[in-house]
Length: 213
Image (cartoon, rainbow, N blue to C red; front, side, top):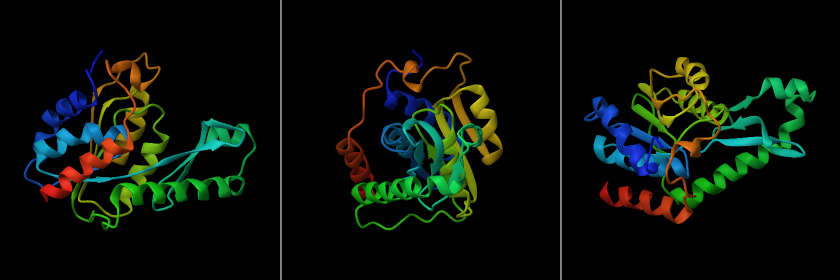
């Protein structure tokens, strides 16, 4: 196993990200697992923690197969090979996309409460998750953040397949991925403990930094 748990993965990432200490980075974590990874990073860099919530849009009748991904600002990325295979056009997914956007807004309200969105323009922004598989949802998140003109956009993850890393690299100024194993089945295979993270755990971590600010 490469990582004991998500906290361990975050500590390892924090050591590599030390160059951003003192720059008041905004760390945008993908819930739920990405929030646990982000916690030691925010501490080490004296940064600000907030969330970015992309959502997968599943194929009608086969929701596990991602046909698109959507971000909070309605940025949509389509999985073109799947779209072509099933002879779909964007209009076919309109209702499903609207459902996922509504779910994003619901979850942001649960986690963030009445707090306003953080300022992104001109800042160092570090997007963090606990790992990436195909990269479709994280790509939607990155495209969404880029719309707000960050000063420097960084993607930091513990593990991802090499082909996914190379596809995402042009989207950011800096990409930190601790491991790019050639034989990649699922993110969880590289953790000793990859147990599910609860909403309560996410809310507790967010509250901790809210109190500290």
